[in-house]
Image (cartoon, rainbow, N blue to C red; front, side, top):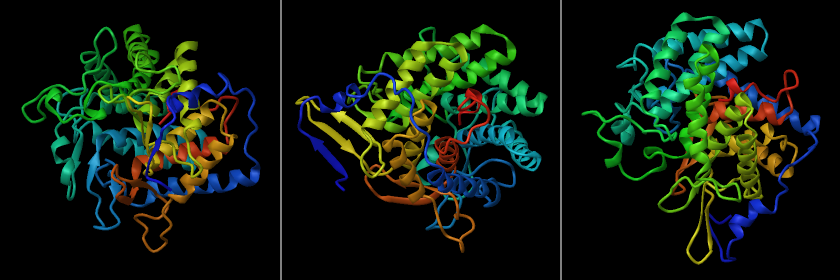
Length: 419
């Protein structure tokens, strides 16, 4: 398979989304024989998250287990927030034993977030070095607004599941801090300038260091906080960050994640689509739901026969499509989950995504710190990154369960539990 492909037909990339019907209608669920492997893989993923040591003794979750150096590089605030939300989802779905384990893990994670990495109320340091941090060391002291939004969602979910007053207090602090960094148009400041972190304007150009469509994802936590407190200012901010993302969505459904190059990375593209689905569901905004569906259909139509959505996608001035398909497994899981949210989990494209996910689950019975986790895939340059990754595993677990058609009640997913 070519790692970087060029399609010389002018406009073919934008036509991908246009060829798909505006709505998918009724799509058959996967056959039970196909659902079994997905559910088994999800159970193995949950076991890895709970038993492999990926959660530190202090409660924070490590970023991944590096199978080459055999270390956990650092504890990561953002992904710890994902795990708190995942725990609330697992607790809501499982029996009493599952609930006890999941919420116990989440309680330790919340305690770590609100003590070890919270220098000011509502903000969280990006990471806590626990081994060789390498090129991520410069991020350690940044107070990312995106991370705070992810953690906010987890805090509200944990409070809803347990009644924790500490989680509720921390959630309110986090919501207040976020509102100070979202302007009236919904544009989000990536992080406030400090002597340690510097200004975001001076950071190297990258989608994660610029205001962009990925910031719509903080809207899920803000919407949940608005519901919890009854304060419309949080809900209005949730809608505003989603509306800002709409300005960068093309008619095909594709979100432009790099406004300078006009290109799209499937990971932040999916963040935006996820947020529009959740906030649209929470507020009854049909336009947000429609935009999420169009984004999902574009990504499904652009998925290749190996089950890989485009890691990076662009159209040059001559109309030639440039696609990079080095596997980024979190993106694979995100597109699959979006397919399920929009009832497209029975399509052939979605089933290819399932197959791709299953191929990237670590099978190493003699290596318990990795066995059952999902690997990141590869770097942008194609360098294999086979380490067992915590957020990839969280996304994959939820995606595989939804893709298997395993639901509780009529809803595909409680929007508050979208990891």
